[in-house]
Image: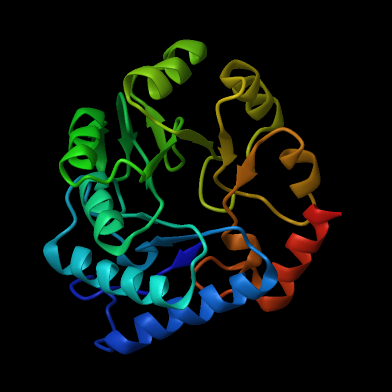
Length: 250
C-alpha cells in the first residue's frame, strides 16, 4: 500500500504538494527493494471521504502521484479512490498506465460510515471500454471492511455475480476494518467457491499469520503491518517490509 498523506482540498492537507509525491516515492522505493510484487495508491489521508465521487483536485493529485510512480518503477501498480470513486480510479489508471483498480463496492449496497453506497459495475465496465483500458484489471472487495451489506446474500451467488455479471478480475476479502485480520474460515470458504478465480487478502496480513493465510489465498495487500510502529498513517518500515517478504518466500 502507498497510503497518501492528505491531498489538496482535504481537511488535513498541509499545503505542501511536493511532500505528498516524495512520501509516495520513498515508500514505493522501500517496497520495491523489499521485493513486493506490486503497489497500490490510495488517498487514505483524505478522511472523511466522499461516498461516490471524489472532487477534481483529489483526482488530479492522485494522477500526478501515479505518473511519478510509473516513472520510478515498472512494477504492476493500481489505484483506489476512496471511498468508492471507481470511475475516477479507472481514469487515473488509464492515464498513468496502471494495471488495476480496487473497487470497495462493485455490486449491491453497503451501509458505511459515508452512508449507503451502491455498486456501479455497469458504469465502471463502460468507462474501461470508453478509455480503451481493457488491460486495467478490476479488483473488487467482497463485503468490504468498514461496512456491512444492506442485505446479506447467499455467498456463492454473490461471488459468481462479482465475477460473471460485474466483470471483476479478482475479489478481495478483508477483516472488519483496516489492519484487522481476515477470518481464515471465511477466506477458505470464499476460495473454495471461487475455485481458480483469484482471491486476495485485503487487510490484516502480518508476520504471524502470513504463511497460513497465503496458503489459502492467491495474494494479499499489505498495509498497516509494514508501517512504522504498525500505525497505518506512518511511512513504510523497511525492516518490517523485508521481513514479511522473506517470510512468505521461505
